Image (cartoon, rainbow, N blue to C red; front, side, top):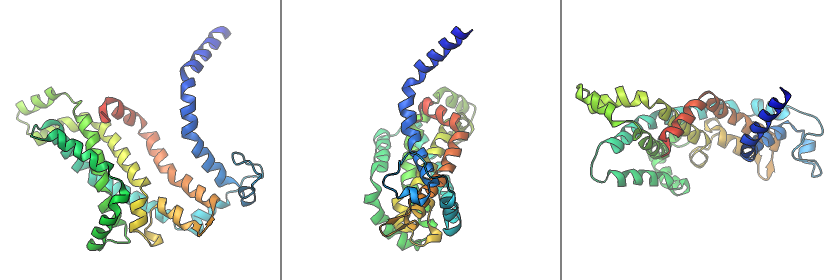
Length: 282
């Protein structure tokens, strides 16, 4: 029995040893954020201290400072509102665009699909200046509506490109059967294609929500007042005073701000993997 267990353990180590470097690469930043947020200021600014270990005791003062002395929970609420609303706007448009490009034959469909993806690749540093003029013209400056309006400009191309690949994996035969039975093209999309594309849709939702949550350039440019900032900008801008970096509070805010994304991925991990493996990134 002991020999059998030893053999199983060796096989387990052999099968998973290649994952260790990737696991370390993924988890080390989270670990470093967390222990930095728990260190006392005396240890944080001690050049002789070991940066990867806590030697002088744990403190929760940095978390308390972020939660009580800043607008952190307002920033968190703004991030949730902006991410959910922008994703809800982008997803229906992306579904219609992706299905049209994947299923309806028309001249230039392939070129148009590639153009949509190239639009997503345009750096935000080239777009935030013209978008600033648009936001000011609409009277949305310094409000979360500026982000809700501008975020779909990069969410829609990205989501459309992902959904094109996924819709192409759906067998055409089931759509043809539905249309033979009298279902329209739009009815086929909503009654047949979307129900079997749930993993792909959830995958796109997760990507879109994550992109909106982590976006920094537009949020920094369009928002100046503290109560309107998102958690990414608020944590960086409000906890840095000139050349003074409050590293403990910054790491506490960054760690807390990352938790919603981690929780969402934990609950929807199976759908996420299914969406990727079924062709969502083809």
